[in-house]
Each structure stands twice: as structure tokens, then as C-alpha cells.
Length: 58
Image (cartoon, rainbow, N blue to C red; front, side, top):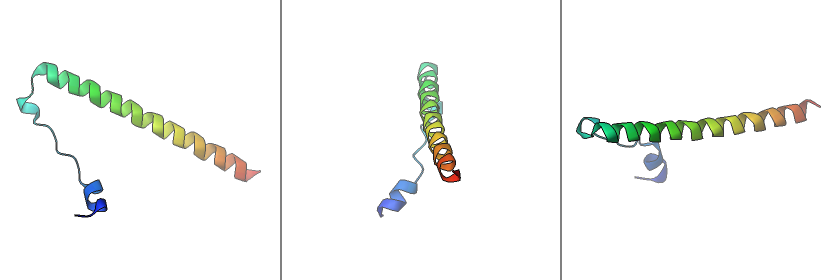
């Protein structure tokens, strides 16, 4: 397996049925934090694109 194949493989999903309610709630919080990090990256990229776009319009 080369690097591209390894990078494109989806991570294994945890066995949620075997997890306790507390563990599931913790997992939800971890996923929410990950979503917030991704949204921050999206916002940063959109701002950079907007700046570049306005620069090249002048």
C-alpha cells in the first residue's frame, strides 16, 4: 500500500454498541470539537480566498 492509498482509507468506526453512555457522550463532544476545528479552517480558507480575489480585481 502506498501513501495515497493509506491516506484515502476511511478510519475504522468505533463499536458504539459496546460503549457506555458516558463514553458515547464523550465521543460526541470530541466530534463536536473536531467539527469546530474544521469550521475554523474553512473560515480561514474563505477569508484567504476573499483577500486574494479582491487583490486581483484591482
